[in-house]
Image 1 (cartoon, rainbow, N blue to C red):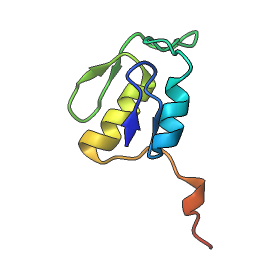
Image 2: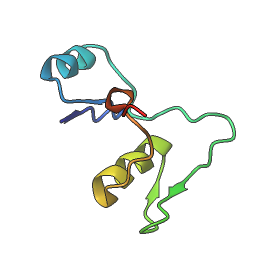
Image 3: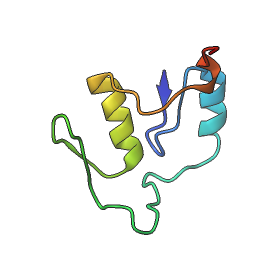
Image 4: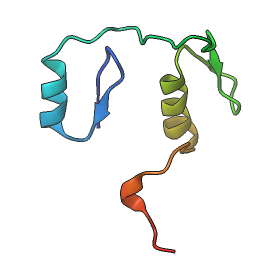
Length: 76
């Protein structure tokens, strides 16, 4: 997996990562109006600046996924 240190974009494709890095990105994510200053993990209480950072932490550190991949749909 390739993760951009500037904006946290991630991909498994080296080509997509190289293409992404050709365009400058900001090192700070823009917060939406009303978004909390700090996001705290409910499992370990670590603090994160963005919701993306928290989601990434939950997935990597605690193996918790907060979304479904539409490619993995299961027939009912």
